[in-house]
Length: 353
Ligand code: KG4
Ligand code: ZN
Image (tube, rainbow, N blue to C red; front, side, top):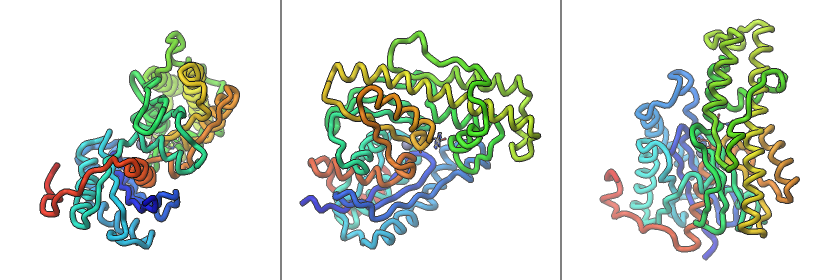
């Protein structure tokens, strides 16, 4: 019975995503509709607006995912959907859609934790990846270091005490006047390539805390002050900045990125040391979540991880940022061991949960 075909639906933040995946690991389709344009126009996520944007595209996104996979609802083994964490108004759009399909076609439904999905998708891309493994999950809202001992058995080694690294990237992009029609992280990464990473002396967060937690609020403040001291005006887009102004901006981007990533390196190094004491059989550190698509993050962490005797597993960028594949795959992992819910009665499927 391991020839499963699962539809995954993800609406927890600002992307509406769906995918169809087989239990063999074959990705039959992957569709993402981004609200980046909307976010750029309004300067951030307003929950009500995000909900409406999801609601407008959800039917089409799911239909496209089924069409591209060349499957019908009746071919599916189950429907998986992100149930948290995230904006509840947004999550509900995905959950209602999943319940409707599940009720209409009498399919089991698997509720998926968004962060677990970021971690487990690495087991789709790297078939060798067995439990136990460590995972660093870095996104706009989360900064988590976990030890995954088995499916559903996760020990938290560290989390952020304030902001996540992706939030720091996004604010830095905004204050540097970068084009926000796509998300801030890639824009800062690109600009950083032109800059001198040693030029602005930002201090590494939490040096005095000998634990595995993270903090990015202080670094954000340091960036804001550096931007003010260089008289950088975010109202002037970088495309219209003078060459001197552009150089200051790229120096700040590069210096920010160096320290933001150094903080990850230091925490991972300590976490590996701890985790190997709990379980010396650990062989892998997974890095996933939107920020894991950053090349500097990947290269630096690969260095730390291999130096400490482990292997880095980093899914391709399209599976690091929010996507439906990770939800479908996590649905498969849970479904296989019997963790799923029966479909709601068809006439109740459209009721609010
Ligand atoms: O996992 P994700 O798509 O959504 C959340 O669950 O939050 O992560 C989005 C975050 C954003 O903060 C975005 O700026 C960041 O990931 N990000 C990056 C890069 N690509 C996405 N940060 C740095 N460098 C990148 N290349
Ligand atoms: Zn995410």
